[in-house]
Image (tube, rainbow, N blue to C red; front, side, top):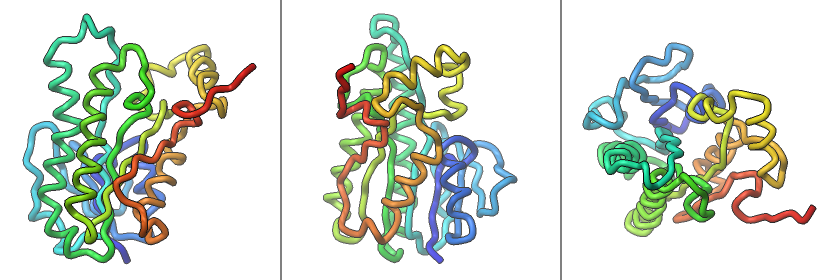
Length: 230
């Protein structure tokens, strides 16, 4: 049974991923509060404040997924430097902390794989996304750099979603009008669901993705690549 660490498994995509792996994988999960609904080895960990407790991990890990992230949509002129620091801390440096702590266990694992999270806004310019796109752009750089450095032992990839119906995006999808407008911006005319993203992550963790590393997989309803003429 493959051993997988999911950082940020309390809700949204992290929770959907954990629920889809229970029974076929042995899970280690983290959040800054407990997740009693999951059958996993749980570690309370604040990605923005604490060093990761490597002694809570098994000697071998076969996969690591870093899910914590933010959605900060503000005009560039109103963004304070502290906002950029906060997004960088959570989205990039939190991933660095857990990766450095888990790397010995990953190197000892069987066909180990790492999956990080970017966003469609890195490669598709969008207004009011400056802070989060900058932070996730750094995640994409980390993904490719580590894929090169850790090959051939550890595969490293990232998933770049568009807007997904998670608690994190709740304020952007509160009304039916907001939901319809968001769906209409996507060629597939719907908002992403946590299960859509979790399915892509499961693939990148699996042995079916054995020959894939250093890639940013867009799971965005076509928003980043497709333009429809209507």
